[in-house]
Amino acid sequence: MKDICQALYEYLSLHKGITGKVQDRIYPIMLPQNAILPAIVYAPVLANYDSALQGDTGYVRQTVQFVCHDTTFRKARQLSRMVKTALQDFHGNMCGVEIQAVFIKTDYEFNGNTALKFDTEEYMSSLEFEIHFNEEGE
Image (cartoon, rainbow, N blue to C red):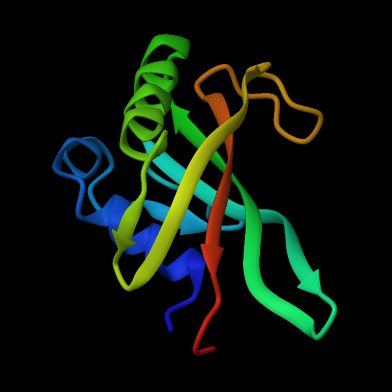
């Protein structure tokens, strides 16, 4: 079975509206230095595994964060709305992973001037989703 992060990357890469904006700029964990914007960064945040008396059931509740980067607040927010539309309430086969449910957990905006980067040319809009699936076959 495919890893959930790889499935998410492939799923977003197949979404024409998203790739129309970011092309192939969907990155794991961190935005590369001097990256062209707009771009999306995704990162697994937390995984909860369900257990039964006989051991692990294989059922996972994975929280994944998506940060949409762009040159204006409006553009970053529009990109995050596209990601939200693509993922919220999804269920079914996602590029090889059978998804039971996707729930949005958080939706917030970063201040343009972060503690590490003082740049008013970059704005960030963040979403976190909880994705429910079975790890059968891994």
